[in-house]
Structure formats: structure tokens, C-alpha cells
Length: 112
Length: 115
Image 1: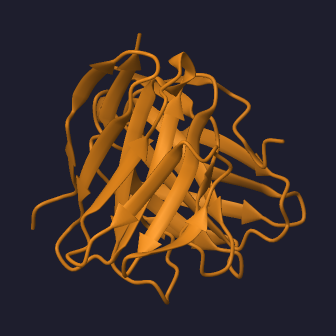
Image 2 (image 1 turned 180 degrees about the vertical axis):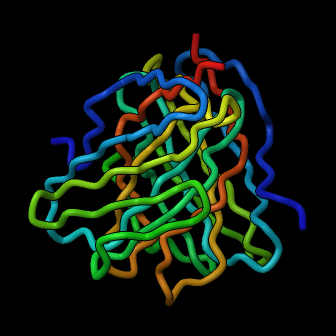
């Protein structure tokens, strides 16, 4: 049973436009959500996170939106840059546990 | 500050053998977690150690084990290797056990191939 789902394996966006990556979850006990970016041959790097008590968190070009009623979160990247091309993982955690449940990832390609 | 260091980066084993992977966390980080990444299953949690104690364990068979030393360095061991154990094994550290910001700092991983 996949508790965190990223239904789009890939996404292509033109440079300068907005990239929107989506993630759905089924476990209502999750209370912290994160996005990680992964380049080939590297470990995932933390991008941005949001607590379940918020519905939006912004950091520069990156904004994460959380819709608890729909159990849905999204990552917006504006403007998209070629260096953003990577696999993006959505992850969730519950309580104080350091255990993250990851989605399967979305390959973002930003075209110059 | 040095990042999370994993050794070896690449290794090849045959079925039935056992393997030990090592992880040195970021200095000052006391929590170390291990994840397995495969094309079919994505990133899956193996276990987490804090102060030399296993605090959480994922849904993996007993062939997968780990430990943490007093300097926070961690090792994971897989015994009786199977073909399906071929994966990228990622170690991650985090600075604080109490406040869960969820942010983990990952190493580059150890790529295990089982023939």
C-alpha cells in the first residue's frame, strides 16, 4: 500500500515557466511533508518542507502548498531553470519519528 | 562542514554472501537512518539509530541489520544476499532527535550489485 504517491513519473517544462509537481497521501496521521531533489549519482537533498498546521510555505523560487482535506500537496517552482532538472521526491513523516515515507519521484526536465 | 560519508561507493557481491556498509554522519548529528532505493520500490526506510539504539525499523527481513557506534558512525549489514538486494543504499543523518523538522541529510549512497 503506497501511502505517498506521485502519479506523474515525468514532467517537462520550458525555462522560465512554472513547474508544478504533485503528491497525494493516504495516511491522515502524517503531519510533516517534505520535498527532496535528487541528481544522478548523488543522494537526495532537502528542498522545502511544510507542517500540517500550515497550508503554504515559500522559499525563494519554491513554494509548497498543502491541502489537508484532499490529502494533496504540490511543489511550485517559478521560474523554472535548467539546473532544476532532477528527480523530485515527496516525503511525509508522522510525529517525532525520523522515518520518512517517500513517493516514487517525478523526473523534471526544464528545457532551455 | 563535511557531509554524510558512505563507504564503499560501489560493490559487487554474489548471492549468499554478506555485506557491510558504513556511514559517517555530519559532525554533531546523532540520528542516522538507512534507506534502500530500487527502481521498482523507490526509497524505502530500513531503520534509524540514535545514541547507539535502534529507534525505528522498516518492513525488511531480519537479514538486514545495523548498528551505531558511540561516535554516531553507523554500519548496516545484509546477510545471505539475494538478487533483489541489488540497490542503492542511502544513509542520512539529522541533528536533533526531539524536534522533528523531518529534514535529513543524505550521503551519496552505496551501490550494491548482487550477481
